[in-house]
Length: 255
Image (tube, rainbow, N blue to C red; front, side):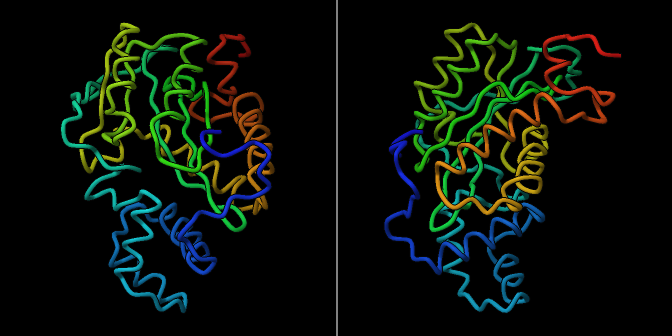
């Protein structure tokens, strides 16, 4: 885990109150269901739930969480001036085999008295999760760790991300380009450009995170290990004719 000691029992971020952590948890639940909600609609939805928060406060917390309405921009983090933006290469491309397209994204995960950020790398054809890492900050290094871990398993033709500062950073893009992989980036406001990992985040949160209410980072990490094992090796997908991602990715041959 980047920056966070593995011995930590829980992580309470500096400058965030317990009340704000509770608000952020609510925001995450609403956003997972309605990713097109901007600050105003998010504030209105919270008011319907009986939580009267100023929209400026909601804006600040959504910024900390790294989320914005997909109709404006679907990035967990901000792009940085001077970072090179690559074109989106996957329009009208038919994905027909493993290691043709990989993509990566970051999501916010609430836990008791804190939160963490999760990055994962997915193979589009098989839906197999190749690697993942946790962090308590939105730096590039945990994304780079996940990328390097995935590359030890194979290499795609195209690697797709959003335009967040982690993925547009020189160290990240050079790792991809130097591996002779084509770099692709989502268009702003186009959540569907990275649809497979967006669907995975939804499955992860509804099938595990929201049900388990993890009490510590160590519990979260162990829970994620179990869920990734379940998702890759035991959870059949209708789009894969009810095979598991591992069966498809490793061509295990079950008909």
